Image (cartoon, rainbow, N blue to C red):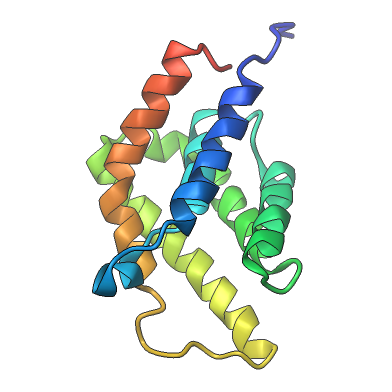
Length: 162
């Protein structure tokens, strides 16, 4: 059994805080439709990089914070993020061997599942999507994944997050 101590919790927390901030910056016109869910993408990264440390329970807590921050139904994003973490942790060994560009396609699928869950719950409580663009953020997430992956990987290595 390894007795190595986990380090770098503040790096993980800072990456989520930065994702919350970046996700709230307004984008011009049509670009706003493709705004990725940065918090979900950071969650995917940490589940891929440290699946033994960051999993379903932590994702549920992050989802509750997102619910409160976005004014969503309490538990809506928590459920979606827990499902996202489960899928990511279950497939992390297969996905980690790919280059960031090839990982982007897996991230697209994960983000599509997350978006469908969020909008399904919204529809159940009586708030269906306003238009057909509700899956566009997943495409934006796929495009932004390689950059996010490289930035977080370099930060994890620089600050020796384990």
